[in-house]
Image (cartoon, rainbow, N blue to C red; front, side, top):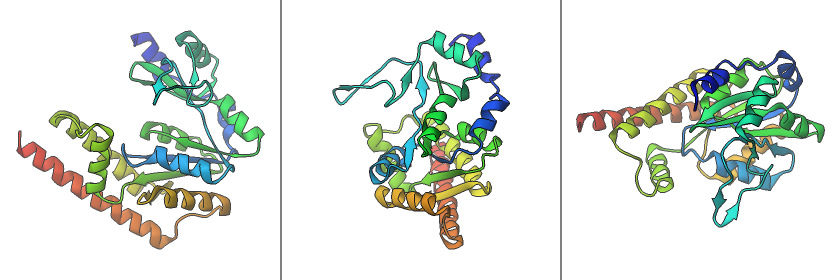
Length: 248
């Protein structure tokens, strides 16, 4: 990616009128460490109810083939050319935008208008940096669920399954695990993060749907249990990192 484009993306500021427009749109965000199961939960939520509608983000990468099926415009992503993405940045059409593996990915205000226009709740999978951006908007009905695995061992198994039996070399593992710890620390200490343990994805999805319908959330006891889970996972990651560093 050219430095001038990186600079344009880095300096992008969501226009105040866009923030005002999305302020009252009910929005459910799922975030969490890689391999926590966010995609599966979103699929289960969409199967259970039509009250939540997934926000389709945009990308400048080409369409891919998944299991023999080519991705569809407006389903997996809105596929833009680089020139189109740059134009939308210059026009202030993004809520948030970021460079991802050399491409330009982001959330468009037009997508929130679409979901709001049919009276539904927006549902998103947002990375750590993106969540921080949404939190600055002070949205009236924003729920941020930090999805976490039930144990370190299960998380490790999920990561290995996703990546064909490996999670990378020492440096990659250390980078990934330290990044996970930053996210876990944030979720433990920020009051707007709602930690939720993803043991069985359908049950996790059902809880999120019910919280959304009833405008509630986990009980204090459930939250305390999830916080304990974050702390245990963080300790296990620290032990694993210490072991890896000792093997250098």
